[in-house]
Each structure stands twice: as structure tokens, then as C-alpha cells.
Length: 259
Image 1 (tube, one colour):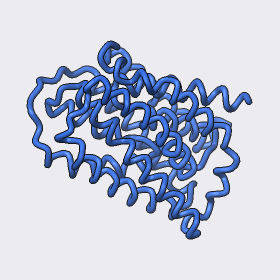
Image 2 (spheres, rainbow, N blue to C red):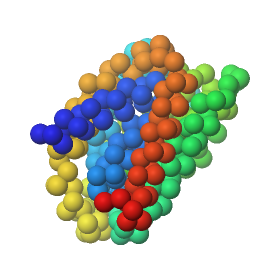
Image 3 (cartoon, one colour):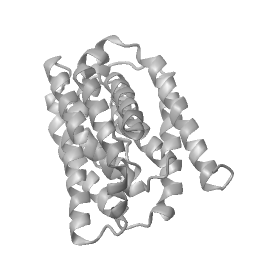
Image 4 (tube, helix red, strand yellow):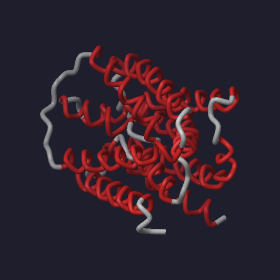
């Protein structure tokens, strides 16, 4: 029960921040799972399984609050699904201890990038729809490999290119539902076909996954409202600091400095 309550809190806070920034649910949840010893592929599968539910609720909220740019959504979602499936397939074929240092480094870089983005003002402009396809492909691949990163990669790039922040966040969060479903299906396929050899670890973390789902679902309906009302810069700094700190702890654990 303690594990469930801990990850319920993690899921709620991560999804609340995700609703405001268009990022953070995956990277925060994955970082915490890795910090408590969950293998990278299991962490990514757990987070994306939870995101099937949380992104559905979050997308509904953004649609209700008219935060979605439908012109950008379709190419972004299709490319994201392709990249995500490829990333999940690659991740399940690599030993956890081999990939973990790279995942930790990736999450740390995401934290640094979020900190950098927090301090820069953006001038709004219209983005061409075709630009989102290669962006979605890269974002989907990195998201599956790192257990999170769709938001930091795609939302930040769209906002940085001049897209209105609330529409960038709403569009990216809505596309993420399709990404989460596709990546979760790929993990299931890898499990059924035997491609994923260390999948047994999933059953040992059922409480954590349930907590992420329940906590995320509790916060997700408010995503559209949060994106409109909450100051983004303070939250962005907080997320970046948390991610860098978690990555630092995991690196020290990997080096044997911390137990």
C-alpha cells in the first residue's frame, strides 16, 4: 500500500505539471521508477501503460478548453506512433543494465533543456503542419527509449518555433494518447513474442503502476485549465531541477557511491 500511495502522489503531481507545461509526466515518473531500481524497459512500459489512461483524460480536457490545433495534430500523431513503436522495439531488445546509463543521461539532458527553455521568451508565429512529422518521429522514439520525453522534445520545440503555448501543449498532449497506446501495444507484442526477455519485472511493480494511473487520472481532467492559468516558468524550473537531481542520484547509485 505504501508503494501505491507514493506513486499515486508522484502520478498526481507529474500529471498536474504536465497539464501546465505539456511535459513532465513521463520523465518524472520514469526517473522515480529508475531511482527505486526498476529496469529501463519495465519503467518505460509501466509509464506508457499508465499514460494510456491519463492522456485520454488530459486530451479530453484540452479539447474541451479548445487548446488543440487540429491542423498539426494528425501528422504529429502518425509520426509519433511510428517513432514510438520503433523505440519500444529497440529498448526491449537491450539488456537493462546496458541501456540504463544512457537513459539516465538522456533524462538529465531533458532536465537541463527544460531549465534552459524556462528562461527564454518566445515570439508567436504560424507553424507549417509538415514540420511536425519529423519532430513527432524523433519525439516518439526518444519517448519510448527514455520512458518519457515526448513533451520536452515536441512541446518545447513547437513553443520555441513560435506556436501559441497553450495550443502547443494541448496538441502535443492529445497526440500523446495515440503514442501511449502504440508504445504499450509494442511492449505487449514484444512480451508475447519473447523479444522482451526481462519482462517478468513488470509483475513486481503493479502497485507503482496502479498508483501512477490513479494519481494521473485525478489530475488529468484539470490539464486544460492548468495550461491556461498556472505560471509556466516557475513550474518549468521546478521540473528541471527535480529531473537533474534524480538523474544525479541514479548516476551515483550506478557508480556504487550510494546504495
